[in-house]
Length: 449
Ligand code: NDP
Image (cartoon, rainbow, N blue to C red; front, side, top):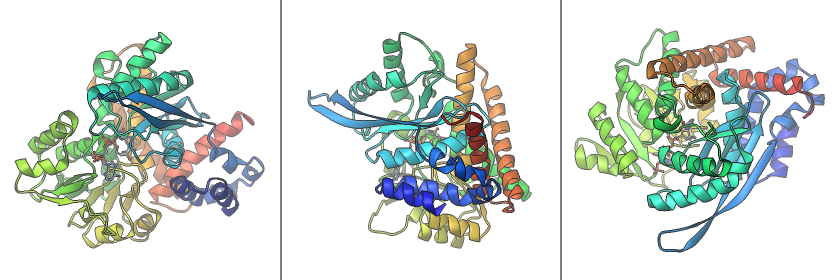
């Protein structure tokens, strides 16, 4: 295992997020490798850590003043052993090859856990939609798709949204794909309802994360009723995580964005949540504006000179990190433990650093890794693809019912795999082992391709 890690680190020394994601998976699957010594000769690790294909391209676009800009864009087609590449597009200034390779690598195992037929991919650009007009975003999306369209397709690669890519961006991307391909197909998921989208897709990642948390609590004969919950982010995942927590009787006390966070000790109820949805999805404002309306809350500006995030330093029972990678470090993890948090359910991808995860595992709290707990989004994307293929739409309660079953099954799959390999209750190991085993088995069945 050390050999392969060294190989990856030496070959691409700058890709620290990708190294982090690979290291976590490889550590977990060591018992699987020990049981299957032939994997060495089959170079399974070398194959699964190398993308099948990486597409990198420039995106020229013109702003409203006539100035031309050029952004860099990527699509990582990581692994297609169990289905067409599937995974979101991220538009954020931090996007680079390392971030997208880590996300694509995680996506491979996550998609395997859903039991749907989807390989893993991820893409995006260092374009920042924040502060851009709708027309600028449209021109960027059209230019982005003018290149990407030749590499994707409903049976090849089906992108979706991620940070910075919501319903607006998916609409512009889909419009351009349709024009260029002269086809109306389910090539993107997260589409609007009127033209091929699925009910419950916007809600799916957040709802799924809370369903997973409820399953973990049920093992201990507990529920979310009356539990105080810290939620980070205020985008798609955070909003619907909060919505489901509130519905199940929990109390949400925080939301954040990259500028800071709000703490509302009284709890964010459905009216306050509706305000946040309008603020973020329609007005595209900042979370600081929450306190202009609800003066009982406190706003704290993000302070990069601190080595911890104060959002994670409040008394609570549960934490749902739903913003971005590495947002919980070792100090944050220690603060969470000190404040009584006994359940961490990751809505974001890789929000906890390896040091933070070690603390959660040492303390034996309920810890759900994103690749299991946030799989509800891609699962309903899979259901959107199924509905598109059949050219029909399932009602919301039908999609929600299927989502619940999928999250319940993923939870059980993680538990079973962890028990089988002697690490009972370790959801991280269970998720990695189960996802890895499924993908490797398919790869070996299909020969050396
Ligand atoms: P959104 O763009 O809707 O929201 C992202 C939120 O996180 C915003 O509040 C944003 O604040 C905040 N944020 C982003 N980057 C940072 C940063 N560097 N520091 C602090 N805050 C930050 O994205 P999603 O809700 O869709 O995605 C959130 C996470 O969930 C990501 O990790 C994503 O990969 C993961 N995920 C999403 C899925 C989906 O279906 N959407 C599926 C599975 C996982 P600001 O507005 O200031 O940037």
